[in-house]
Image (cartoon, one colour):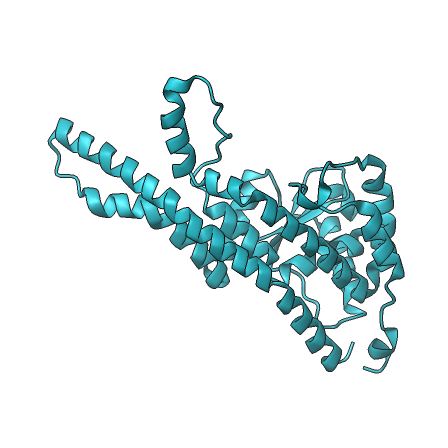
Length: 293
């Protein structure tokens, strides 16, 4: 693929990120409500501890750190990836039970990257990737890292799926995902109405955790993520992996597909598989540009 085509591809994918950045800005603004709730709870708690113990606790700076710390860390993750992304990726590996690849797995991954580089020499492997001890054929991107199922590295679809995930990594998709997760102080279920006497307290903690704002913006975010799946599919197709990725989806995803009510406005993170397969099979990569290099 020549330099002109590569630049056009980069510009096209960069343009697709604008809605996500705007949606993140709206979510971040909503999280100011969560920050106020956290600051209130922290101030009351610290003042009470100081009053009971007699300790001279610096209430204000601690409360401010608790209130706005998650927002600052989230922004740092998005705006300064070299600083935060490696930490996030390593933490993701630890918390999901991932492991470093063995030699045969590293070779399979390197072969997949080499296959992608035949269409675009600028393709680069992620600096950090790890193996999930799963027999499936899945992979995922988060921060600047990639998780790859052990089963995928043993399948003929490794290059196709890895190419799809590289489509997420080379844009802001993976960074946005990690930035959103960092806005959440702790995961919480939506509070039940009963018992009514504790609802105000449970509701306050739900808001303070940041979960309420993410719940409120849940539908717009999932609508956005579904468009990004098509974008990552197209990136893989441009690397010559359209037919292979379509076959992988046909075998591993399509048999388990179920109808989702009001799909367009639902909280499904992925679009229906059949339209993805159709687009992948219809796409024709430009082999001429690669041959002219």
